[in-house]
Image (cartoon, rainbow, N blue to C red; front, top):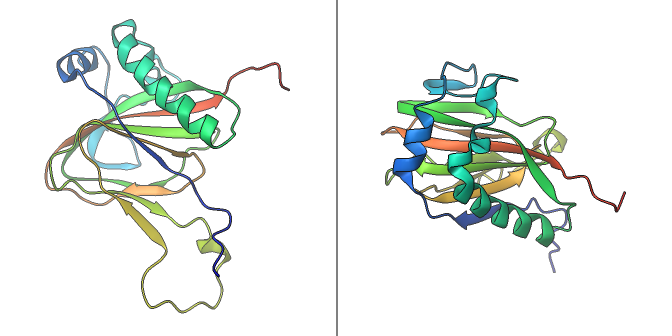
Length: 187
């Protein structure tokens, strides 16, 4: 018998999108370049008002849907409740990619695919045990997990988990966010 211990849990959920509203709100935000993005722009600006995209009052219904899924994820994993700390959007060009990174200072991170044409590059997670491996020879690659993406997909994952995307054929747009534990009386 094989026991799978210490699994990394990734949540996938479907969100109904009002793309016209989302793009309308995006037009009001400053965008720029970010080192982790190759071929795209972002509203992420480390500490600026642009880092709170989901705080925009026009996105209240979307945020409620995201919180519903975030609460389901944290409850299922027996995590203390989380609140969205920062949020931003990335618009990737054709052939754009995201370099491998993780989200330090966060509990759960999320990616909501606003535009992800058929055949979009998957979100690629790296095995967190890679740095611990020493002598294993494997008959197939077990060191990355590719998760196919599509419009309306919300992916929730531990913020410490390294992830990236490979170059894609068509542009795509993603809303991302980080969380922290909400203040509770259980501490």
